[in-house]
Length: 71
Image (tube, rainbow, N blue to C red; front, side, top):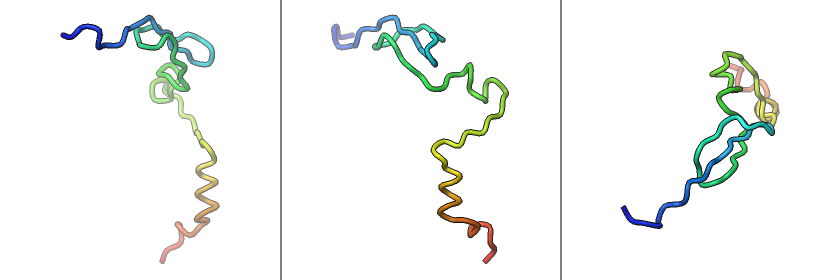
């Protein structure tokens, strides 16, 4: 294995909403995440409806009821 070609691994803190949720090794000392397994609906069993950036409204505004009508 060649020397001095790999980045240095340093202790890293994974941060979710200002709280440290995990510690690991990485090339960065801190990583901020928006979703992690402790709050993800698949792992917690909760069902949540997330309409990010109004995607449903944007779709309805663009197509209206035309996608429901039979041709």
